[in-house]
Length: 128
Image 1 (cartoon, rainbow, N blue to C red):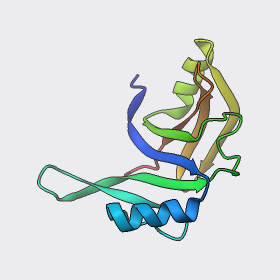
Image 2: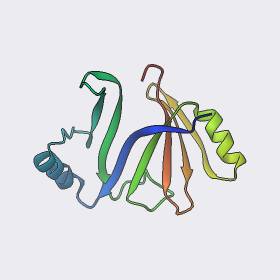
Image 3: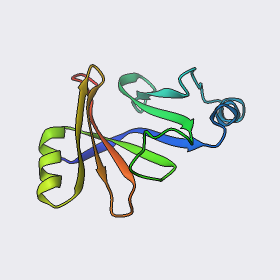
Image 4: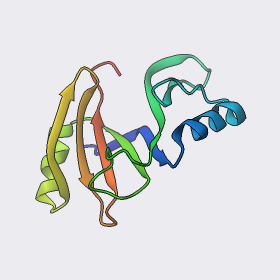
């Protein structure tokens, strides 16, 4: 069974999220949307778009989305079979959070690494 197949997103907190979003937009040309981030489309070696995106987002330092972690970031990793991986991780003694979300955006679960960082596992919807 494959475990992680790629990075689905990078999320981090800022003391002043709006100002930091504006800085990235102005100086690095990132197309920051009203929701605080962007979706980078994937392309092949020739620049042709293919199915898949990587999300990049800046949120407020007061947001508790990364809890119970106190880190200022969270990485979202793409996986092929979320339920199977969650079972394996639990069997290996990892700190897997009980909640699994399933929506039109895919399946999501979370594990806390040995340093206390919350890691998001994401199985995209079919075709993505």
